[in-house]
Image (cartoon, rainbow, N blue to C red; front, side, top):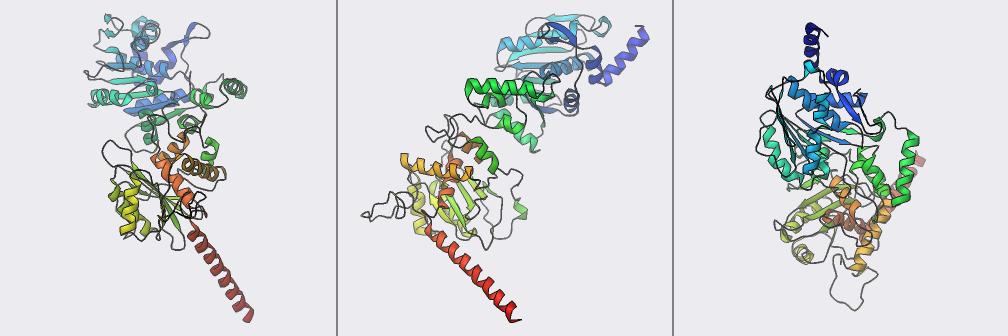
Length: 509
């Protein structure tokens, strides 16, 4: 190639990382054990364009799709064609980070470029630092280091497997806030359904933060077909009796990837899936009518219907900065649709007053309060200050555990072993039968985490919103809410009478 041709190629490559990668970059094929040209698939090209057009990109992917190679190639393109570039490479462990930088990855790509495309010399070359004569430098770090540099690009590989991604983000993101870029890429870790990586991705997909989201399913790799997928599925089912590992390694949708593990869960994932409606967005405050409760943390999906009845499930907590959240869920009594949810660190009397305001707005909704611990204070406040009907649970006046000789009204739901069992039996039945509609993703996630053996969330996860939703579901049960049944029967009777009157008037005409 002549000097003029080299100059023309250099200009082409400087304008298009895709052209440069497709034409000059080689990557290592672990199957064939040789370096091969990096010929971009359509999805790889589209991902590269997203990376080029956005400062912050989060990539959720199936395994072995060449995304790490793509990101490293883009980083090297910056070093060659936009010096003086500083690249920070992060991975979970130090050896993994140095592997990204080493001759097996980034340095390997560089060594196989034409001589005229490489820098005049390499100034620094060790495990953690690699500097070219044009002033560009790449550094490799474990995720516990690297916050003292200003970066052109920071890359976090396998970001969902990082033990404390939030700490890393707090230390590393400021290094690119002067105009640099950041890429998070990872398959999912099913043991952490509410991880920082997943939360960033969810928010990015809803355009609630400054990140651009990319999801790459298993089938974008050309060699993979339905037969290949079925073989993976059968293998995983034979080993684990569940599809969690399949959805972790080879998801077809981001819903599969983000869904929590289903093994030993009280409510089957397929039941929850059929009842979710995340397309219904909360009503923004400026669109709420006059008189709507103005309460921090209250999310409203449906306005009250004058002809509908509503129930509230309430799970109180202590309300201090380190406690669980207090949570309340409002459901339409007849349809089971979630119409509102409140969650926050609220002390019992404040939580009770919010329940009262919400319940009065929703046509004097009946309320089922968990009676354990701080629930006693909530029930006391409601008893003394509210006109809402306080429902009685399995050991109350109408429950199967009621004691006819007990003169003290047992309002609320006692979450002992039997109470928890009845509570989540009712919840499982409602989701299995499609007798409820859930809009809150956080609540849906908590419900999906409830373990079959303990009827609680796994260690480190929350279940306050899950409990409040289940309490609202039992509040729809005629065994615990006979007044609602009588009201419903009366409404049906009125409707029949009105139809009869209309028929009579038509006949008289």
